[in-house]
Picture 1 (tube, each protein chain N blue to C red):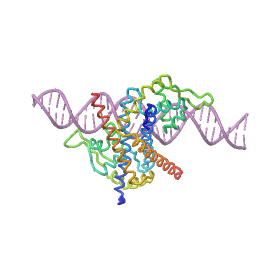
Picture 2 (picture 1 turned 90 degrees about the vertical axis):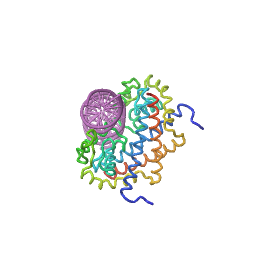
Picture 3 (picture 1 turned 180 degrees about the horizontal axis):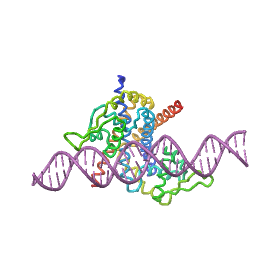
Picture 4 (picture 1 turned 90 degrees about the horizontal axis):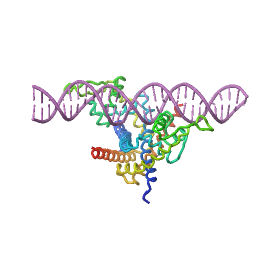
Length: 157
Length: 157
DNA sequence: CGCAATTAGATTGCGCGCAACTCAATGGCC
DNA sequence: GGCCATTGAGTTGCGCGCAATCTAATTGCG
């Protein structure tokens, strides 16, 4: 019953990591089509979602919400600023920090984005409960993987 | 009970796509650490997995297994060839096709890759049954998303 | 046969995602 | 107060992932 040979593990392994990868790219592909009208990429859309929900945020906080660092966010935010959706301004009481503020245009875009989730949900064909269950599993998986990475890092040092 | 407002949908939406994205990146991060010893990136590892299982394949077939096109595979395979793990040679009976053949060194790498899946499985902390169930859900999701994308494409034309 | 349509790869361009590094501002510690 | 470690952004470099375009080989069809 238990998968014993290394080859069995090799194939099982391919399936889980591969399935996850494929699903992620399939999602990305559907988002790309739907977001084209808004002129946003998927990561840019995620940034706008956070800003719509929380308002003005420093780059650091934005990165914590999205698990992204400045290496990814800096050029992305520069593009959003170029598109007129956000403004970046140095914080007054901490010159190291940069506040990202949605412009009027950026806030207005939210109205046009309202139907995006419904179209995505329709594309999945999953009912909300099923999505929630899947989401919970994925979050547990991420948590475990992050913990393992942290352990590996400390044991390495 | 049913989530009705557009804002509820916005947040639900963020959670599923975001969770998937996060899990995918977390996986990638763990793989990166483990594969560093082998000198492979994660996509390169996937290519080698396919070659180990199926032997010499044309680029086209490789792309079908991995859902990748030549725009991604061509430079990746060039790097694998540079690393001495594969050779690329024009097919004799169809000059358009390029056969990708693992070298001796490429085949030898399989031995060193044998313990990778076990380490990954350990990092997830999930038992095999749970992984299989999750994988099945993800595959259904991918299938639905692909179908939706195809429908959108045809209705657009 | 001859020519158009199709097919396989390769190339280019762009946007992440992340590691490694630089720089300026801040905080802590003596 | 002065010095050094830490912190927040930005930059660079590299490898995908994918759309768009190009070239060459093959197929199909009159």
